[in-house]
Every structure is written in C-alpha cells, then in structure tokens.
Image 1 (cartoon, rainbow, N blue to C red):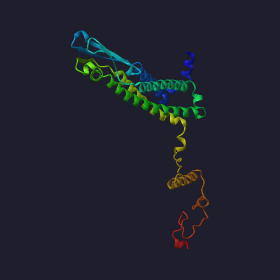
Image 2 (cartoon, rainbow, N blue to C red):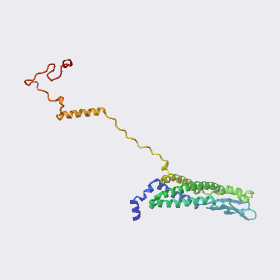
Image 3 (cartoon, rainbow, N blue to C red):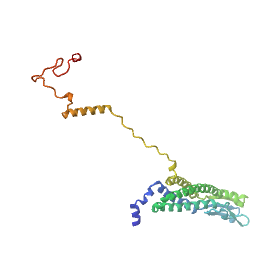
Image 4 (cartoon, rainbow, N blue to C red):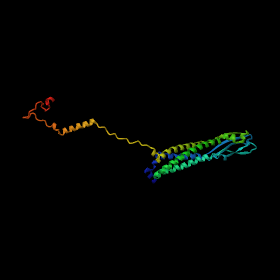
Length: 298
C-alpha cells in the first residue's frame, strides 16, 4: 500500500486519465470479453425423430458442440426406423481455424495491453528513453489493429457458417437418412443460442476501432510528425506612430512648466516700469512696448 500511495502521490497514475492510458485500459477489458465469449462457448440444439414403429423413435435428441467448433467431429445417434438400428450422424464443417485465430489475437492483445499499462505507470522514463518506446508501441499497435480487423472478419464469416451447420432444420433435411427418405417424422425442438458468439464478433470489431484510435495517440508520442509540422512565424510588433497631438500637448506642458518655475526668456524679460521718472516712451510704441503698426516701426 505504501508503494501505491507513493506512486499516486508522485503522479505516476496520471497516464490513466490521459487518452493513451485510458484507451489502453479499454483495450485490455475488451480483449478479455472477446476471447472469453468465444473460447468458453458451448451450444446445443435438439430435435425429435418419430418412426412408424414407436419403439424405434427418439423423441428428444440433444446435440452438443463447443469451441473450437470442429463440427465434423461432433455426432449423434439417429434411428434408421428399420428394425431398431441406429446410425451416427456427423455435423459438417471445421471452423476451428477462424475461431482459434480470433482467440489467439485476443489473448495476445490482452497480454500486450497489460504489459503496456505496466510500462506506462512504472517504467515511464524507460519508455521515453531515446524515443524507442513510443516507436515500438506504435508499430505493435498498428500490427494489432490489422490483426483485429482480419481475425474479426474471418470469425464473423466462420460464425455465419456455424449457424448454418448447426441449424436443426437443415440437419434434419440433409444429414438424417430416415428423415430424407420420409420414413420418419422429424422436427426441431430448440435452436442453439448464439448470443455469446455474436457478442464476441461485436467485441472483435470494437477492439479494431479502439486499437485504430489508440494508434493516433501513440503516433503523436513518437515525434514523427515534427518534421511535417509548420509553425507560423512570430507576429512582428508594430512601432506606435508618433502622436502629434500628444507631442504638442507635451510641449505645451513643458512651456507651462517653465512659466510655473519662473523661467522667462530674455525677450520676455521683465517689463520696464513705464511710470518711472526719466523714461521716455519711444514714438510709435504703446505703453506695453508693442509697435503701433508695422509702418511706424519702419
């Protein structure tokens, strides 16, 4: 518990909240569902054969079959309605290749998903060292995506053939001699339940979608997209245009400041005291010393 607490406190499990780790958990779970629903399946159908002689009839014949669906090895005893003899009736087809291929891919996908999750959580530094971990992970993910597509498609076709081979009505018409010759009255009692196998096919294609989606997130971790990414140039800062009004206002403030400080230019020096004795006003000037007119000044 101390180790787990330290890992949680150190943020080692944060990868579970990221798409890369979260999808990997879904892959792990869906892989379990895929091989469990297919590999553990066992089905049964039943039929009834009534001969003219009631003593030779078999009212309830149960036929069992299971994974890996080597149906050509499954058989049942059917009456011939001729003197109490019976014959062995074999089912048709061997669908073990597609079923075993699907289960094998699911088991290896489960093991790889589990190993990848352990690596993400406990060996994150080793995983990103020299970028080899993401590259290997990307290649393996692409391979499993292709395998899921092929195995799920093959298993879907195999399941369709299994449904035909285990259909009681078709077995009665094509596999039981007494029923084919009309020497007995034959009828089906129950069909096999295929919901578990249908679920396995659905999980197979869901795994294909999950691994394909996770391929993108793993691909981004490799850094292979960096040479192809074009970054926009940084925006150039525009120099602000000079504000004429502000400058003028500043100059005005500077003049005002000069006046407030008591600074006066020479030509704005202290005005002469016109009321002092001995001072004679020049001709053509007003009392403030301003020329009365330009002509007078000339």
